[in-house]
Length: 411
Ligand SMILES: [Zn+2]
Image (cartoon, rainbow, N blue to C red):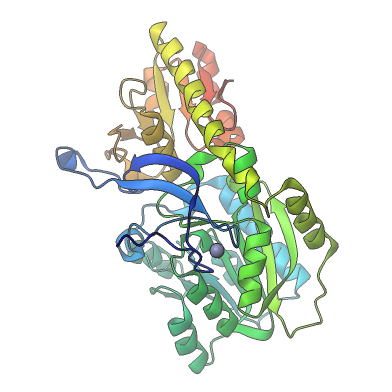
């Protein structure tokens, strides 16, 4: 008997495909030179959408223990992301009057890129980060960090020791949680009675409107609309009382949660407005989810059109950046050394390594000035303004930028 996949939130059978990106390796599994001749595991990158709760999701092909215990992504390597984190801490301190008597807990605190700003202001902070190599950097910066996966079990252990949060936050972690119910139930336990939860994640509506198929990868198990996430939180006794729309990661939302019992924080107009907007756009019906797949295929064809045309003219093209999302794009589109000579990245961890599946070598960015390529193909297109500014010197030799998403273009 064949048992099909079921929804990670409501357990309904998953019978609708949102998009199928074929087989892909884990997007953070950068290879060393001596690993290039070995087999790499490829897994299906097929997103379903639940017809009951409208949660878009991948099956859990890989255990998080295999993905997140040594993670290559160091948050502190992006200037704009650091600025985003700093702005956030100032906003929270101001809005919720946070001080020395409070505690901030961040789930998936990475290298302490965000908590450092609370620590600077004298507000007690605690990070939870399962990737040991990344957590070590945070601890060295003076940010207490627990290296475990968060869920009910850790939340209970912490609560028994009197550790609960006035502000409980998680940026780009909710999507990466395989046992969503355990994670959200854990947040309910870790939140003080008057505490506030904020969670940021890419917004499914923006992903679909903007053809952002490359933000789909195995490490992201779930893709949320506001409607879906509200249902999940409500199921665990948490009310979403506010939401902000953010430009980060191609369009994210920051949800604000509180205990259902905490009536002191009324639901804001903008939370109601976003929910209504999603309903008007049809995110509570199946029809809209059936159009995405063809849009993605057409985006692939357009990207390849540009690369083929320019290569035929004899132009040189190199990549800029080696983010996780870049690897979904490279693998799905079949872009290897036939199109990109190499790519560059600011993270020293990646230098001398190769992109998973497509085996494009990664160098430090100063290589660009020496080689003077005709085009830079920007893989972290969400940071394109920052990158185009930083790399504007390529204009000196007539260099241009190729941005693949949302609409492939030359700038
Ligand atoms: Zn469901």
